[in-house]
Length: 373
Image 1 (cartoon, one colour):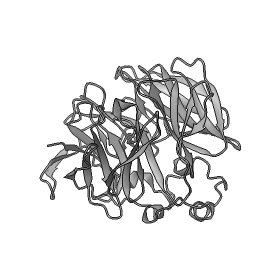
Image 2 (cartoon, rainbow, N blue to C red):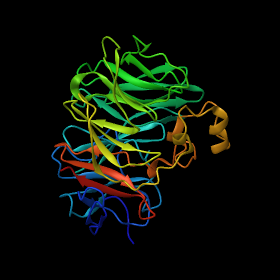
Image 3 (cartoon, helix red, strand yellow):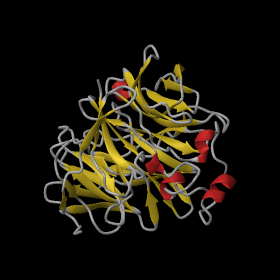
Image 4 (tube, rainbow, N blue to C red):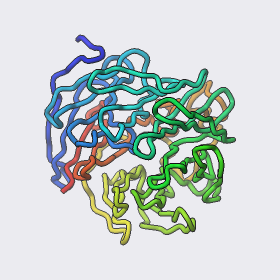
């Protein structure tokens, strides 16, 4: 089969009814390879909701693809060559550009022409997933360069980039939705929740806790400016950005979380046990089952209620640096936190009427979309 940038493939779309809720599920890919949406902190849909961006290994390495005229359109390959970071893509608010990571560099691709542009490169580094701020003017990503950890931030036009060092692994840096001069990020392992200004000043830990409190998957509670996170595997909690007051929303094994823009509800998957994808009302903690994921959700860590120790990580990935590199991001096949493509990682469409997720229910991870009743 021919492949390469611009290659179009026949649609692989099919539908079925979820056996628990009878919701309509669209299976968008069926190739016997790994196929998954973008990471749960980013929507896989373009802002108009007409195109879904996903990652596929069907050509032998992780590359970007899209399905236009969702859900029945052809599949088009967007990138080729060196593998991209499979959980790095972020779609610009204009929908015409997608940013992604290759090794120590951040790239931009124009969907219309498939022209690529290097935004910034950090020699000898590994970058994590991209996150956009403001109206798409700013970008941040985690970095590991030699023995140095931290995050980088700068403009999407390639100017003003700065390395902000941190003494431990950094993951999931994200711009404040209302104050884009602030970046929230996770230190790995504990304590997790930190913030810093994009110029590198104002670094502080927002919540001091130990390895016995497994805080994960921190993100902003929509456009409220507050934070939401899980204390695995027992609770979903929120934090006031200003006062740092923490409130338990519900006692539940919420896992990967994605809030609505208004911050009124939180979408989540579940694990150990996997009881499906749920929508949780922030005010009351009431939850509603959307559908089953039937994903294998691998990773020994998710059967525990603390962070992985260095020894456990080393046992899972012989030869990896003892300081854990970029955590799971450099070891997608590890048995501690993954492999990540076996996790659902649900996220909303722009109108919040559809939920994209991954599942290996058929033996290979594929892209699914659930219609929200």
